[in-house]
Length: 162
Image 1 (tube, rainbow, N blue to C red):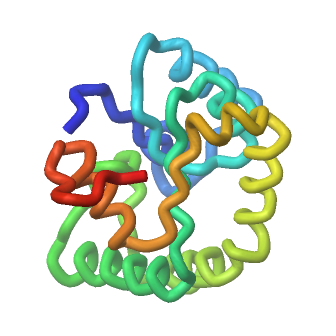
Image 2 (image 1 turned 180 degrees about the horizontal axis):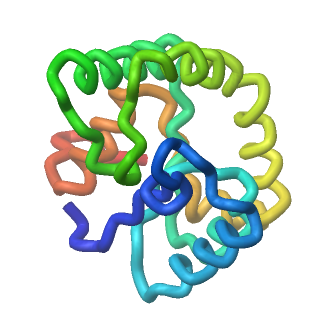
């Protein structure tokens, strides 16, 4: 929609068989990715937020309710395992197989308690108040995200996106 290249961090972090990239190698890869002149990056990967947040023009925080995340996760698994759908944003050799679902559900269930506070802390410590006001777009529901996307398309109707 914007014409900018999209970088799905999952494609770079995961190695075949869902093996993670070692942290030092991962951070170097992210340094290379953020050195590109323009991009949209998808993924939280908290150990690299310190590399990405300070150089980001805009930061979209999708802060949905747990039930939204879990419903979408289940839908993704159903699509992958019943319909053969392959995520375009995941690394080759990392198919979503049923045996991984419990692990992903536990991760999603605990995200609010584990990852969310750390992300908010990093936003507060890595960016000034003014930078947060200028850059952070905090989307708390799929409806807000859809409203933001309509805004990007120039189709926001009577009420522009704040």
